[in-house]
Length: 184
Image 1 (cartoon, one colour):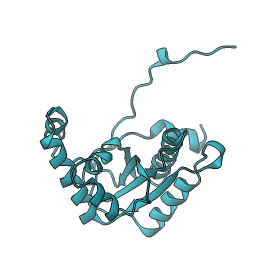
Image 2: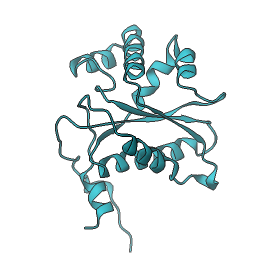
Image 3: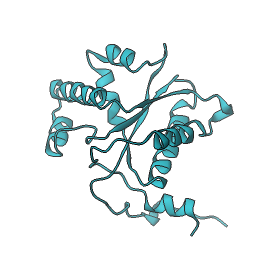
């Protein structure tokens, strides 16, 4: 099996990160992989924000927990509390992808996030694609958070990827072959 297929096969969603920060070389490689993502008509409907400021990630985490605690449905809040109370699993790096909201932007941001996750795994890092990173941006301090993150005007949350050294390993998910149809 070639290295690309091996990376795809072995990658899993990490939800238990060590405090170890990423190196500048790792951050540059991750950012390069993000920007190398293809997009419909090469419109690149994203703005990539790499956050390695742990205090800012923790602030986003606390704001997200506050938004979840105030929600009418407490299921999300209780689920995160049962997993240690951290939406971002103590990750030392978050790549926030802002979207211009145009046609195909959600698909293009998804492709970009997969590039980041696979690049992270190839560098020996754990990663998890994190839609919950939009929670702190949706609450009463959402606009303030977007300003801190330097979202371009008119951009909204697209997706995020958390990265760092994994505290523990995990097997990739089981493949459901019933979801595959091959026509010849």
